Amino acid sequence: MRTAFVEALVEVARTDPRVWLLTGDLGFSVLEPFAERFPERYVNVGVAEQNMVGIASGLAMAGKVVFTYSIANFATLRCLEQIRNDACYHDLPVKVVAVGAGLTYGSLGYTHHGLEDIPIMRALPRLAVIAPGDPVEAALAVRELVRWPGPAYLRLGKAGEPVVHRDGLAELPASKLILVREGRGPAILATGSMLPTAVDAANQLAGLGVDTAVYSVPWLKPFDAAAVATLARKHSLIHTLEEGQRSGGLGGLVAETPGGASAPRARLVRGGLDDLCLHEVVSQKAGREANGLGVEAIVEALRKGS
Amino acid sequence: MIPNSSVPASNPSAVARSIRKSLLRMVHHANASHVGGGLSIADVLAHLYGGVLRVDPSRPNDPERDRLILSKGHTAAALYATLAERGFFPSEWLDHYGEEHSPLTGHTNHLVPGVDASTGALGHGLSLGCGIALAMQRDRRPARAFVVLSDGELDEGSTWEAALFAGHHQLEGLIAIVDYNQIQSFGNVCEILDLEPLADKWRAFRWQVVEIDGHDHDQIAGALARLPAKAGSPTVILARTVKGKGVSFMEGELLWHYRSPDGAQLERALRELDDSP
Image (cartoon, rainbow over all chains, first blue to last red):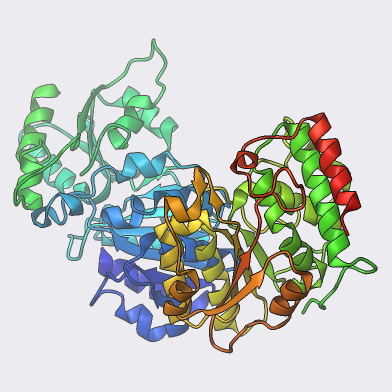
């Protein structure tokens, strides 16, 4: 996704001279294509995330569309007040990009686990929140973010995630869920890099006779609550999947969706990582599996529940 | 480019007096705080909007204007009084400072004509100024970014992140002005978290330092007339000021960081200002 991101950014920057990229001294061997091509619109600000977002906001006040780039918590939590006051309150086109979402950097320890960003970013006014499910969505998200007039947050994994949308996607319209696989039984709603896992689980479930739909949910804000309400009437069970805090995350969003007290409504299972403080080396795969986000656990939950 | 327009037929001393009087009336009316830091920066603001800043009140959003970020956003009332004085909006707006639904909030509000950034959380303004100055530098445009800082907000690490950045990138279009009135929220700066040697700190960050008496009109005008103070460097003007300046019973008094003058105190303060040279 990192690679798709930077390639898409280079592409939009070719035709849009407003586009800038700032990094907090991260992205070695990732950001060079942009830096070499547009040195006048690229700055490594050093390891100073608060300053990075302030500078991005100042640049945006002077007419630029500015992407900031760092690892999960550094891009978001370290400079939360700058995102809130400088970017969001002034409604500026500052696009915060975080790589290493969830347990991407699981083995690096707790400081590098990006778990609370979706609930926290979601709570900020005017800030669009996008977590693409594969490199195709990541590239489209960059184009959407340049079009999006205000501030935004883009949550990325790492490099080398599998492509889910093998036939490509035309666009990533704001708030819209993307149907990845039809199904008349339960439905999986996956955000970010849980999408390939969701597809794997649905394929296995098909072999067990459980016809499972899969939706990718790249847009967490704005969020298409009406579409989710429709799905809740159509499917017996909805399983949300996210590599991060589900309270306030995708799981929270779906739970908040008003369905009407009398409306028939799907049972909701929320997969995620709540209040997780890992104290040892944990790979992304093992961390997911230990917390109900492995393919097996998802298959089991859906097989039993439907 | 916007012409270097000055306020006609007013001298900075008279403008500053007018700003102070408006400010005192506003905080009295709104029962608001932070009058001391407003009085300490009034002279500098009078000069900035009295001809230094390339701004045009009829086009407050002109992309080629100089920007002023009042990073010490708690003294918004002094900025509002200055902007009204300069004609960015009618002076009558000041009468409603702090009232329900007034756009004149207790900390700066960028939706007020002439206010370039909303501030109030300390330590944000210098980074914004870096961004503006960087855009102008790379685009080879002449607009400058002025950032007015309090001494208290030099405690914020983010201020020094920005200082380090500006020096490295030689942002000569960035001018910081420190309202060094030596009193922060709980008391004297030198006792709470001493900033000295302050000029040396800025120099070590590769800024050109100009030290002035922030109430001496010749010194203020002199410092603001020669910018950047050194080609290829950001400039910081360390303006030694007196909190509460111009009102005898407020000068140097911590309490006037919080207190609002009552009717009698307001009358006395206005009289003192009218009687001052």
